[in-house]
Amino acid sequence: MRFLLISLLLALGFAAQAQTVKLLVQSSPLAGFQYHAGAVLWEQMKEGDALTLVREPDNPHDPRAVRVEWQGRQLGYLPRAENEAVAAAMDRGERVEGRIAALVRHKNPWRRLRIDVLVVL
Image (cartoon, rainbow, N blue to C red; front, top):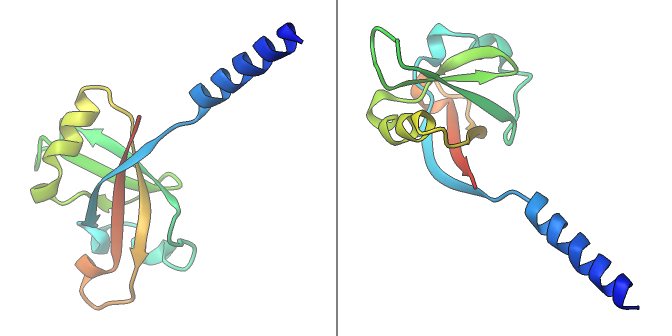
């Protein structure tokens, strides 16, 4: 009985450690939508889809640039006015993820796609 109880407690401990916590830290529009693959991929994307955030410290236009990709295809960037904290977290090695928060058919490309940025704890 004692062995069973210890085994159960150990299993619960490992299960608790295996879970990850994701903290929403930012919600932003997508910059550059009209210049990248967003229009071509529009019908395939859906709210909640995972986005990959890629740090571009050597970007000639913005040293804090964070590229946004969906299934390996570039959609655009986090806006320059909103990328400082995310870039700093990525530079520190923190695990940062993105997801599509909203897709809206709008003539203004800044209003078409909203991105949630999450820090994985």
